[in-house]
Length: 396
Ligand code: SR1
Ligand code: MG
View (cartoon, rainbow, N blue to C red):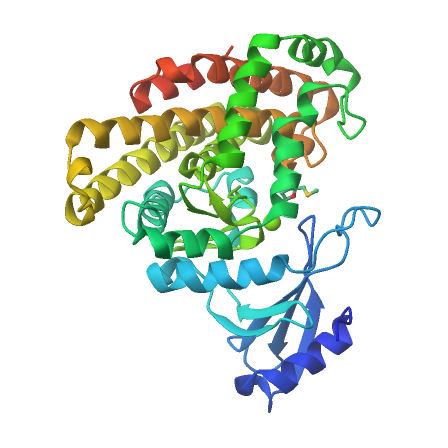
């Protein structure tokens, strides 16, 4: 039966269920910092390399106990970690234990990796970041799509990953709430005129509706569904993808867009996190390269897989392949833009922006909104990743 754990009961639970910790003297700390769940680290007092993470679903949002949410989201995360872990083990934590009654997972702990968002705010550069995300996304999205799977197997998987409540959060927070006077928006007074302009822009809303429709109906591949820089752990050698509870069969571009949006928000806010001009310029250049690397590696890997595995006679065709990949790039740009806007004045802002002092925040918020509007409207004219990067660099 479900019971919400605390630091004492989480420790006892781990002692009982994790063999390699049963004889250890353990300590437990709560490390929850996301919006939804509670998370504990349980480790041996003697050997810091012996530790696990326990993540448990809560019946409401952690940040808003009035908002109910299905406990079963942990089941989706469990399936996602195992599925993607089979394809590309180096990018995922191992699952040690899953309990469908207690709605919890116990998984590998990476206590020497740090959340990417925090690293980018402190100005740390990782050469392997863009390439790693590109490889992860190309391999997982290709191998879970109709390009690779047998159609019956693929539809089985679509069913397994039906995730209505978590998708609804995204549908509302990303595609709807920012475009009307929704009480959940958090609009600073200085943003009022810019937001009202956006709310009155019917052409923009028509484009956002198109992206929303694609998000809701295009079961193209298994996607993470919330791939922002808080869902990535990193160190000098490797990166790990966590927090798969939003996973479902959706458009491939949605994950790419989520990643780009958060890199762009980091880029736009470097001005305020770095006082040294040279360091700032370097960091900005690095972030644009992350976007470029990510896309180039994604595209290269995806084409390799296509040439190797696509066997349907009408699809062994370069014209179609190029069209398919270009359409992923253009929709990724659209999703990136929607994700930028939601993080500026929606329900769940990001610390890249909120850490900036109020009087300086206005500028970065306005620039980001203007850039996002431009990206939504122009995405279908962009044919090459460098054209996208040029638009970011134009700095409205
Ligand atoms: C109400 S939940 C807010 C956000 O937190 C998650 O990480 C997702 O990004 C979601 O949109
Ligand atoms: Mg999360």
